[in-house]
Length: 347
Picture 1: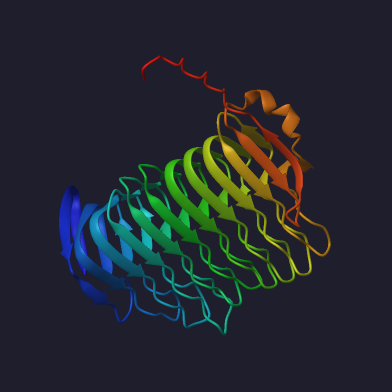
Picture 2 (picture 1 turned 60 degrees about the vertical axis):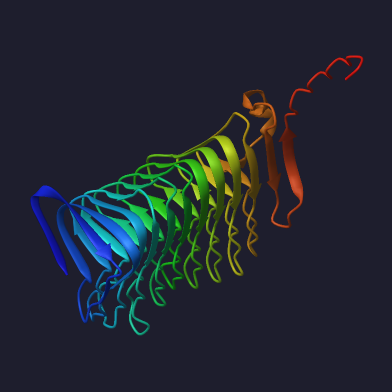
């Protein structure tokens, strides 16, 4: 199925559509397209010996709202390329402004070094999730290569508006597990519930729960859990990894991944960790046979919580634990005690 908007903006309603492609993508949109969903919709890309087909391939901005869509990438059956993505944007942004979106990447070839596809992949734009959406994005496995990303953007990833997002990286082989959420730009979370889990790696590293390569990770509300993937022969993944991490509110849990024959991952790994406001943060180091990770790794050293105590607001609590779950550092700021009301006779 192809939607061609040309130079216009078009809105198309999918009402209980079920498309399974023999090859290529189930749905291809060209131009700026809004998909309004009604009922249960299923879009499944075909398997391929070079690339698996995508559930949805978009060239131009893609906006999804309304009911439910399950978009599944096809598997890679050959010796090149990767599994298809659930939703793949060649150009333009991906915006999910309501409804339920389930996006799953296809698997890489089990006989060759091909990677798993991503749940949602934007090659040259942002991924924005808002409006109370429910999004589940899962990367496909890459048995002999790398696992796919749950959500990947070359721009930024923004989650707001009470949305519920679950992003799981696919398991991988020699090149490691995929990240739950990966962005070349920034990752910004201002509300809702976010669970991001890195995929496990066999000979490669565990994937990161949330990773920004350049734009920083900012959390100012909501409930966020980020878990690094485990590894058998390499290093565990980071819970949250970025050059800059700023958390000013919300409830955040960041756990480093474990390694059976390598280094444990860090709960948060960054050059600059900025903690402020009335946040609640628990960070746990990953366990490794060569060495354990750090709970809050700033420039390779465990963050001294006394250094950031003055920036915390009433009710804030920051806890750092080692790989065995033992508290190694903690700071807690009590809330002001409200004075008791005077007793008025007769009341």
